[in-house]
Every structure is written in structure tokens, then in C-alpha cells.
Image 1 (cartoon, rainbow, N blue to C red):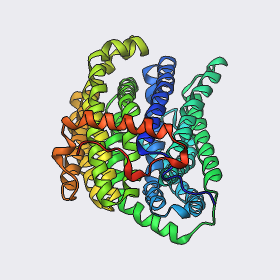
Image 2 (image 1 turned 30 degrees about the vertical axis):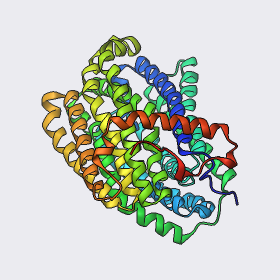
Image 3 (image 1 turned 180 degrees about the vertical axis):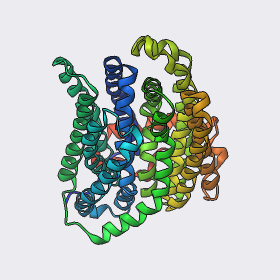
Image 4 (image 1 turned 90 degrees about the vertical axis):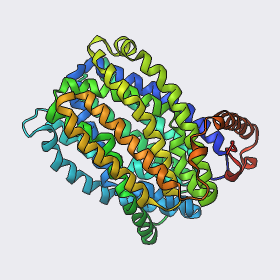
Length: 455
């Protein structure tokens, strides 16, 4: 069986490569987002966004936290990776079936039993199997510390989506239905690429009931965190059809799409925090979380500032004048996006030290904030109220998570928020990335030696 991927590259190198990959994915997502917006208009984009969001939410909920479970178990049992892959294949069938049944029941409630897009939405819900598989396989790659493989397969989804959209455009067949087909094709490409990577690197072993129990135990404990995170991130899209028109939802979709640029550009840190910290253990993992939090909040703020200033002109130029109304909700969302990335780091730190219930408590607090905020603000403020609620919810999650992490001996609020340490962190990150790149893979630094920054 292939050896685990841990230790082949330094974490600094992994962060740098993941960041570069994210920039490429930003370009692909930006291209598809602009294409869909211009071809479907605000109303069509709003209809597609609601269906896509429902499938995504149910897919994540149907996974029952198993994505994080396979990441944690893989980080702790690196020599059982083949059996983890085999177990994941079995889980896809059961979890996907549960998710599909749930989605088919929710769809008429969300978009209306008489909505003309109901039939298309029902067919698209079959992709929930792909969503569950994508989450489990991506989690397994992360647990194996195979961040290079994870980056490769992540590109498959937006690239395939864009190619299929262009193909439909060439035949003059761009509709809400064909956009959903293209999205499903992109998801299928990611699943195939992930499984192929796992097959080549660790193989597919015999499913294990013991591994399934361990994955399930961890996953169920982190389910509250996932429920809260999903509610904070996506509940707005499920409630918007009740209060607003499809055109308004289309504007809000553009605002969230543009704000996600920050996550895509600097979110590499958040993607690596949980598996990297879990592999390092409690002491070194907690120190790493504090340093990554400091680096991410600083970088996110630097990217958010020009987006805030240029929002009206950039949106009109790229998406068209019809979407200029997305500028104000985008500006309100930007601080929340930075807070959300920080909350991802903090949640990863809590999960890495085997405190998933604490991470769940933070996300559930954010969910309560989201529900109350949306009910109070959607009718009087519309999409601006949704943006304001999201920003407030992520602020609650971040602050509560940092407050809970304070009990860990090696985590410090002062160090995590210290501006003086940012420059040192960046220099260390660049130095380690260059050092790791100059060495042969088998000589690369062990994970414990990476990301030495000012404490």
C-alpha cells in the first residue's frame, strides 16, 4: 500500500500551492459566474442559485459530519487510508440516499409546489450522491495530508463546469436546466478525479466497521458545527424566495459570488488548518492555529478593502448595469467574509484538539443569530438585511470560538491578533516555501518544522 502523504512537503509549500490553485479557481468561477449572470439575467440566476444551494445544503447535512470524520481519522490513522477509502465508498450509498429523500421533500417547500422549475430541481437533486462522495473523498485526501492531490481535483469542478457551459452556449442552449446540467457535470468530474487520485496513492481497501464507527462518532459530534455553519452560510438563500423576487435573489447571488473571491484567494490557510493541526497534536497544533488565524485575518482584510471601494463600478463593468444593485449588499458582506475565514481557522483548531462540541456550540450560536436576524431584517431591508445578518453571525462565531480556545495553554488572543507578527509570518512562509521547493520530496521538512513565525 502507498505510504501516507504527510511529510512530503512543508506546510508552507502546501499553503503557497493551495493559494495559487485558489487564484486559478477564482478565475474559473468568475468566468462561469459572469457567463451565467449575463445569459440568464437576475431572475434566471436567482432560480438556479436556489436549486444549487438546496442540493449543496442537503448534501452536506446528509453527510452527517463524516467529511470531517474521515479527515480526523485519516490524520490519526495514516496507515489505514486504503480501508478509509473503501469505507467511504459504502457510506456514499447510504448517506446519499438519505440526502436525496430529504431534498425531494424540501424542494416544493422552498421554491413552491407550482413553480415551473420544480421538475428540473427534482432531477438535479440526484447529484446529492455526487456531493456526498465529493465531501468524503476530499476529506480523505486532506486526512492523508495529500494537499497537492486535493488541489488538483478541486480544479476539475469549475473547469468542467465552464467547458460544459461554453458547449451549451455554442449550441444556443443556455437555460436554467442546462446550467444545472453543467454544474452536475463539474461535480461528477471532481468525484472521478478524487477517487482516481486515492486509488493511485493509497488504494481501496476493505470497508471497516471499526473505521465507520470512529468516523461516525466524530462526525456526529461535529454535526452541530456543520448545521450551524450551513445555516449561517446558506439559510438566507432558502428564506429569500419567501420574501423577495427572483431578481433580488439574483442580485444577492452576485454579491455573495464576488465576496467569495476573498475566500478563494486567501482561504488556503483555512482549508489546511484542521488536518494540519490534527496531525501535529495539541500543543503544536494550537500554536499553528493562532499563527494561521493572524495571517488569514490580515490577508483577508487587505483583499477586502479594494473590493469595498471598487464594488459599484466593478460589478457594473463585469456583470452588466442590471446587477449594479448588488454593490451595497456586497460591501456589507465583506467584513463578514473575513470573519467567516477566521471562524474556519478557530473551528479547525477546536476540532483538531478533539473539541468538536465546542466548535458546534460556536456555529449554533451563529445559526441562532442568522435565524433571528433574517426574520427581523429581510422584510424591511431586503438583501441588505441578509448581508448584515450574515456579517453579524460570523462575528459571533469568531469571537465565541476564540473565547473557547483561550483555555488551550498555547493559544493567545494577543498573539493571534498581533499586527507586529504578520510581517514575520509572511517572511517565514515565503522562506519555507522556497526551501521546500528547492529540496527533493523525500528530503522535505517534517510538518513540525513549518510556519515558524513570531509567536
